[in-house]
Structures are given as C-alpha cells and as structure tokens.
Length: 166
Image (cartoon, rainbow, N blue to C red; front, side):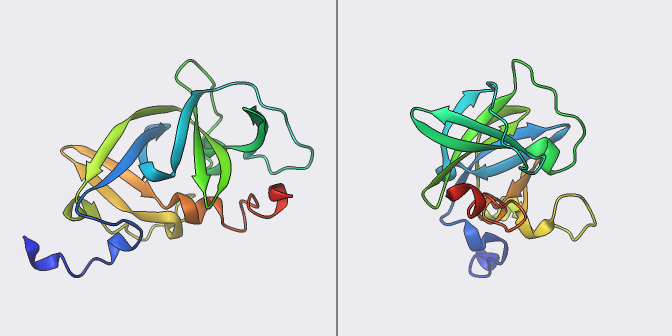
C-alpha cells in the first residue's frame, strides 16, 4: 500500500520507514515516545522537592553530578494518585540538550512502527492535550498513544525549559 507514502501528515516528527518508540504505561494505558530522546532508564528513587514547583514536578535528582527535574506523568495527565513500587521507573530524557526525568508506572519494550501503523489521533476532550500526540500506533491488538515528548516537555505549562534551566 504505497499510495499513502508521500502524504504523511501524522509522520511530521517521525522520520524513516520504521521508527522506534519506547513503550511505557501510565495506569491502564500504553504510551510511546521516540527512543532517540531517551538517554537511560532508572529505577525510581526519592527526589528532592522544590518549593513552589507545580505539583507534577516531583522535584530534582542528582544524576552523576547533574541536577535534573523529574516530572510525574501520572500527576501531569491527571491519572489518579501515583503509586511508587518496584516497577516504577524514571525515563531520563534529552530534549534539545536539556536533561530531565519522567516518572512512569513501568516500561514495557521498544517497538518499531512503520508509517502505516501510525494513525492520526482523534480530537477528544481529555486531560491529555492532543497537541502533544503524534498519533496512535497499532501493533497487533496493542495500541500505543504516541507522545511528542519534545513538544510536551518544552510547552509553557510545563515550565521546564525556562524556570528550571537557570
């Protein structure tokens, strides 16, 4: 089905024939982010709270001498009270040279999606702003909500690129 290959509105942030996404869970949903933005995956550890930071910014951690902000995605997306257990992980991201952490319930795998496996996201009035979605990736019976992590982490409501960069 190569007739749709040149018209790729969904693929604006994803290049190539197959793109790799790190799949992670928040509650009962599976999400995916561009694997190239992931620096490392670590177990959850206690963070140092920062006064007056938004609730979804858990605090900061010392990553080999670099102090990085840590965002709890369950709080950010209003998905209930987070539970920190042995599966909870921090995905360390590198967004435009800025290192930050993202707390998720668990990480499942790395999935390669071809452009025809990525469908446009429907417009819905949900807590998750569809401006931050690349689309929905389908693999067999699985559906991944593909997040444009660059756009999300650098958005003004996150405040990470300006406030904490100082």
